[in-house]
Amino acid sequence: MIRKIFLLVGLTLVAFSSYGQDEREFLDNRILYTKYYIADFFNDTTKWAWEADVVYRRQSELGQSDFWSEPLRISIRPWIAYQFTKLTRVSLNPIGMFYSAPRFPQESDLDRPFERELRTTLQINNYAYYGRFNFTHRLRFESRWRGIDNEEGATHNWRVRYRMRTRIPLNTDYFYTNNTYYISQYSEIHVEFGRDYGTNYFSQNRNYIGLGYRFWEWTRLELGYIYQLNTRGNNRQIDVSRGPMFYLFIDILSKNKRRYNYSF
Image: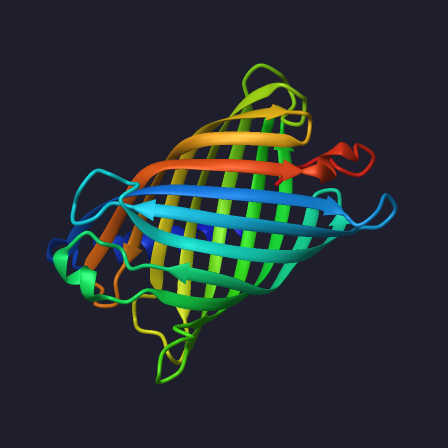
């Protein structure tokens, strides 16, 4: 069944990428993505945990290569999570605040306003191991209230995101060993829909590869490169965003070896 689902998604994406390809315009935009994440159990006996993340992004302007030139996004999200098994965690972000600029690959984008957004997110993480390979399936369901400062009121839509991540330790046989260097790679698709949404349902695809280092057993740094496609509302223009990405994970939960064999 799972193989059939992946096959259907793959065929749909191929059809989507092929349709009208000769009419599409690809807009180049250089970016810098950073993410800071911390999490821990509430105590040593519970399966309940708290999480928090801050995202900060910058971008270039009008096709320039300076990815620090302009702001792109800042967001803050608190989470509450429940660890159902050692390999499955469900997290809820009741309300997250996002402040985003439009992307600036062309001059007409300079007149587009910044946007404040409130978002509620349900997230499911499931982990798997094959030898030294560490895999994570992440599924997110998002309810988005965009443009909350608009005079005519906010618009609402739904988004579903699926990410497949692979982490491969280089100098050890186990990803959760202290002083481990590792390769991290993921690909993620975004599907959006709703009464207030347009027709660019396959709105986004992200692809990332990076090198990470685990220290203190429960803290990790990653530095990599992200390549992202964002389909605009006219379904003809596609923002191609690319540039460095930096992660800092403080996953204090990983100190609890009795229950914890995975990481954020």
